Length: 81
Image 1 (spheres, rainbow, N blue to C red):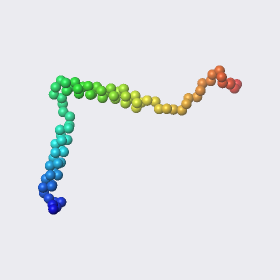
Image 2: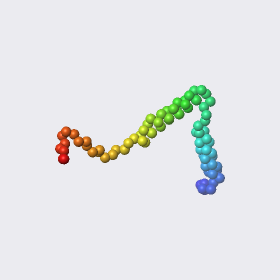
Image 3: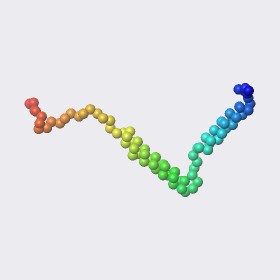
């Protein structure tokens, strides 16, 4: 039986955390090195801009529903004078 204070298990736990840290470092984005990479980055930025300007901004500033405006008088309504 192994106890909870086993140094081998502590090393294994620290090795897992080092692997996780190493994996997190590799996920971070890097600058593209090729022309195709720069064009892809530009395309993503353009799509993000279009999403913001044509979808999210009009949705955010759209008018809210209000009360029904009063009806304008027409020839069918009675006049009280």
